[in-house]
Amino acid sequence: MAEYRFCKVEDEGRVRIVTINRPEVMNALHSEAHHEFEAMWDEFAARDDLWVGIITGAGERAFSAGNDLKMQAAGKRGPLAPSGFAGITHRFDLDKPLIAAVNGVAMGGGFEIALACDIIVAAENAVFALPEPRVGLIAGAGGVHRLPRVIPQKQALGMILTGRRVSAAEGKELGFVNEVVPVGEALAAAKRWAALILECSPKAVRGSKQAVYSGMMQPTLEQAIRTVFPAQQANAESQDYIEGPKAFAEKRKPNWQNK
Image 1 (cartoon, rainbow, N blue to C red):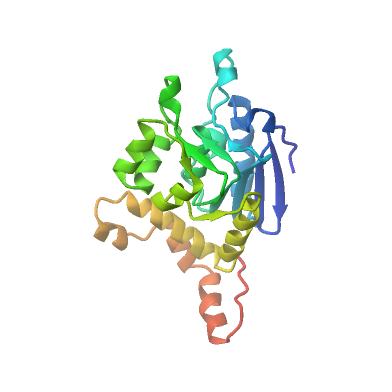
Image 2: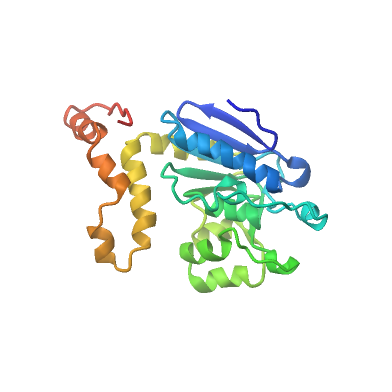
């Protein structure tokens, strides 16, 4: 495995656990970090043995405070990686599920990282916000687009136009947080969600994720339902497509091969 400066990477079985590792600046990220994350996620995407990804933050205070504004103010912002903030906000071809284990502050780009994941687990001390307008910016790494696709438009605009902070509990009420857990238990909860995903066929999971996101881009519900998306077709042609019903009939756990 490659050496990383701005993140810690641990592969536990079929799960990759990524920790944003700049606790001295509340895990804020800059250009060099984004490119490092891009290379790391590229490797994750290419690995047949890794089926689920989890991302969290180092330390007890923050998941990620977003953009490293001090470096930007010093004129050292640099170009964003093509795959976006933390290598995932502009990555639209990853069918493997991603889980955000939000262990504290998730603001600006930090919240956008979480929104780019498929499941968000938040500790009780988590705080979410898109405060970019307060410093003359907009949440351009997906925040202004993803949030109103996840929660009601007026609720999203209430956050986007004010930059107000939202607790984990309110995040769950609004609908962008899946589960709220005690402080210090976000990663453990994310691993629990990952274990549930791993009980399912990896081909079926990827086909389902691709169908959800691609289907929402179709002009009508009928067109979405009638479209067979590539990962969906790959699942139908896989050995796992046969193994699932066979295991059910034989009253045993399926032996998924991702083939």
